Image (cartoon, rainbow, N blue to C red):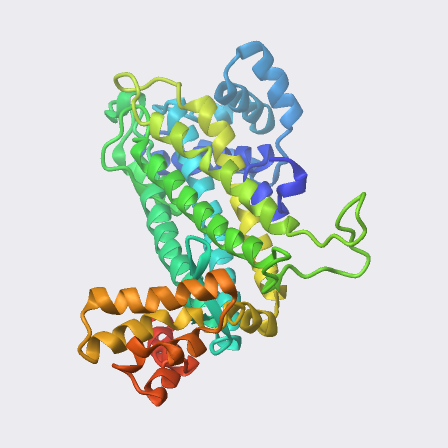
Length: 434
């Protein structure tokens, strides 16, 4: 991913230096296990560890690969240059390239998942703080983009927190599912390597042995991983879209923090645009772009082909680096989001009580009026608010048919905002468990 949308810790997971370091650790741990089994001399296994503090020369490995056309062989050749050919002669014994490549990929994905899990937890903390801050801040709820009934800004933050809580579970499940390793040799039969070697390597690398591999780890695990990333990305876009709508000039119930010296437009000095959440919408598309190729990687020929390899070299770093950046950016947006409670109240009252129509409808039915007649009575008064700018309560009080069923005090009581927020504490307890 380009540096503009990258953070160093996640980028480091996918660097060539990190990859080769993991390759080395897998090979060295495998040598230890084979020495324990008496398959190779103990001194050879110990000699391999001399490269523990070595800096693997990426340029040298690339130079060798230009000749061999094989990345793992190029690395093993470079390793033998470091520790000596005699010490390295038992390295990779009974193993195949996928043992190293697939196990490394899953190490990288689990490390990436750990960062993403921490990112989501940080975002949830920000959402929770803002939810309690605005638990009772009244705003209008909308359906189809149209005023519906009152809600609170705290409930808006709370539902996003609940959504991210589900995403946290998805990421933890995805991490667990992809945290497997395979050191099973050609076509996965362990013909030339003892399963104990796999168990030892996986334990040292923080993985569990793949129950049955072919020459590769099954790609349904990776498909599930990238699907989970895609869902998280969609949730980011969901939150970003809400903020973008709230920042529209005609709404302006909230906006991204606009820092001193910031410029919104090269042409129009007055502009304050929701650039961060627009950016998040785009980044979410990039993360989701990895989902379909990951699903298509599941179907491989027989025990192995490499149609998945080029895909994973791209989507592994790109999807995790982008999602890491997006989660951190969204957390910053939520932390600094500027809320305008007065604008929220003004927007809700723009149509002069219209949003209380359901309460009047229900009151009429409870007073003995049929639902069909109740709906007709309420709607005819509501349409005058839409079309003439009338006051809804005033129209209802002047409607003889409505007054035949409801007294003045009953009608006025239906415009109490507190009615719509009486269960906010109950909902918060469900979301936050408090």
